[in-house]
Picture 1: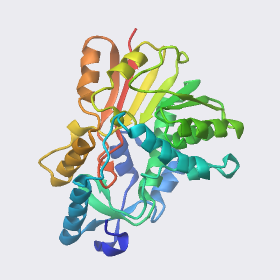
Picture 2: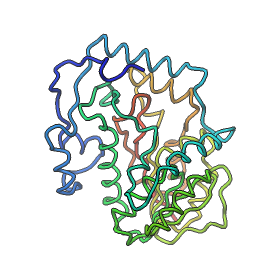
Picture 3: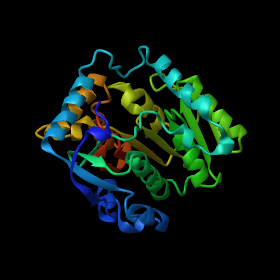
Length: 323
């Protein structure tokens, strides 16, 4: 993969993402953002991007294709994936000290100094941590918009524990935040948080074989971020599990292959990568079918139009169980 220094951009100053851009990308109104978020968005160079020239765009596309076709590229699912995630989250566990904050819990797959996807194009951010900073504003928006009335939040597939720590601190430990994962190293991260004073709890959980004895609190909010993608087409056991729980809302932030426009080359590359990794498919259609049956009601479905080098991982499917 070529480095940021190797990528030339058109117009070095670039252009900033405005509050209007964030509203469009999130599907939000301006009043949904706090003063602190607006300040972060409008800071001079915080969210500035530059277009790539034709040669640089083609170079990035070639790199994406090489990665997509690499025999070393792993696939989603439960065949051998668990050990891979155990190793990955163990790196975060080794670095995490609750007394020093939670920045070391940043997932390793959120990379710095590389192009990102924006409005079906590749662009080069001026801020090397553009995606990470964008994501923190996005997560806070989701929390304030949809989680404020819940006493308990459950993240399924919590991975490095970043979201659990972020939400616990955002709500000043006034809400109980659970982190569940099928990797023991992930649960150990949550346990370390709890011993460090966070109002959190960890538990092992497998999407493919949900533990029916694990009952969720009434009125709770459920969150998944880039986790259900690992289930391919085998997410129904988890959906059925949630439909039997007394939760108020479920927020699924995942890559949605059906929402790409395959007539656009940048989108088509994401489809190839998505299918090569065997990520989740058919999810929006499944939710819509369950809504027709009266089992849930859809609150929001929104393509992100923003993402990493390979996919858009931040699309929203938000729904409520119906009883």
